Length: 296
Image (cartoon, rainbow, N blue to C red; front, top):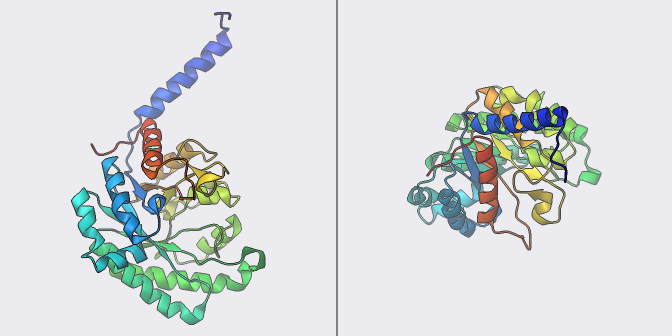
């Protein structure tokens, strides 16, 4: 193999090396947490999830509204979090947005969850849209109800002292780029904020960097997830192993100046090739290369 290198190749190599050093040396404002979904959806899964997330030095944790509710009979999930030295940041709260007949009940449900989030020290209620049959779904027929429901829910959540963020999701009534933009441009953003899932955006056919850039002013939460279209983890993967431009996204989030925590996430699937702890460790190492720090 020749050891000769031309001037152009040398300059390119030097630039790449300098970029890597600069990237790793950046001072990062935002803290990084992890969602509990990777360990499972059941209340019983939360204990191991909290133990693992805390052991890796993540700064916060996201649970589910129904999990917080289930743990109340055992004294509250806040006791488990406190024992692990880990704070709750948020909880995912699935609600029906398309049916005005049950809107009042859905508002009441999420208010109950919001009170538990606050009891556990959290500040964010992640509003998860209801699932729909996408091949039969007509967004235009439901847009007004979705917007009205989001406004009512976010106002009620704010009254509890939390921020309600819309979390677009594949297979739900707010999935595509067009639906996401239409809803966010119609809601009252004094109350309704945005909590994008960048992996879900990529899987749904959107450019997550463009969406984050366009709505950066109202982003107060984010699920940082990578996507490679593989068989495991519903097509998602640990950070740095997929197609999502994670460095561009975190750079945009850092520039917003908004109060938020980056929440690493990876969906579970049958026959996962790695344990949740291993995937969380890989994502942590990747973010450390981007300049993020973790608790010792």
